[in-house]
Length: 374
Image (cartoon, rainbow, N blue to C red):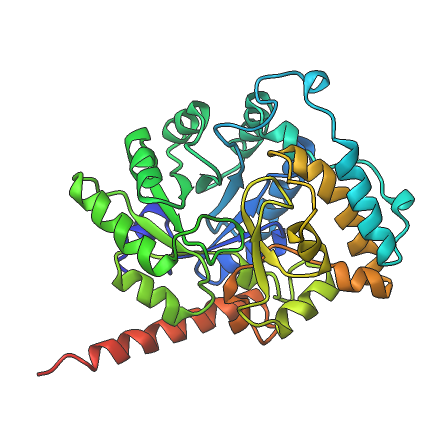
């Protein structure tokens, strides 16, 4: 394909797959797209292990790494010891919510995620050092303008730097900063997302980039789970697609089987955009857990990354118990997913999903061509 994304990344089809599962990353890259490994919540030692495995199994195909290094968050630049404590109100709220669903709040462990540490300058530097020891073909930042070190290492190692944006102004700020690829994510997206819909945001950003004389390629994101949606986004000015949710129900994905089952049965209305999981707006599968945080009288979510210290230990325990058949935990179980979940009705292998994207994309393009008269 003649997309500048393919030329820049050395791939056959401009479909990028964000996933926390290394098996998905490998399968997508082998099928002609590009897998991007989500490394936000793991320590450098674990990242080294994951990337070494990918190197051994991907057959020399290109792959990327995605980090979360926001420009601002609670406690940024401070020592961990000086960061605010979790309010008792939030602890009590979670304990009560769990107990109402038969989950022993005392069984919830502490925080083992490295997300908060990784978002600091030092933590990000440690992950970047690991990532650039491997033959990665892309480095991406999921929140805000990439830190200077990421941009510097990208240029030094000839690795394109991508950044996710949710508004026109954010996109132009990324262009001025010198990023190589804009991931334009609409509000339909799973995980962190803005309010503007993909259908509006993609052409808006494309026009703005063109107006300032830039040629930064665009990957459309947000609710895209089919090839025809990808073709529509490219018709609006994108050069390919960045996807995440569609890989959660694949055979290779490590998604909690209970959550997989919920996703396959869900409609596009079964998601909610809320700050209750990370402290920043993110779209996730609706459940009694998300409903409780949106109810009247619920405590206001804490700023990132403090809210994760409240939610993640409890949700890890919910996942563990739900997989063991605990009914209350099965009801509470949730995960990030976009509104495209309503189109995710069949479990397939990741390579099959790539092939389905290709075939559906071609069919959509042929249909559009059919509207052009002689």
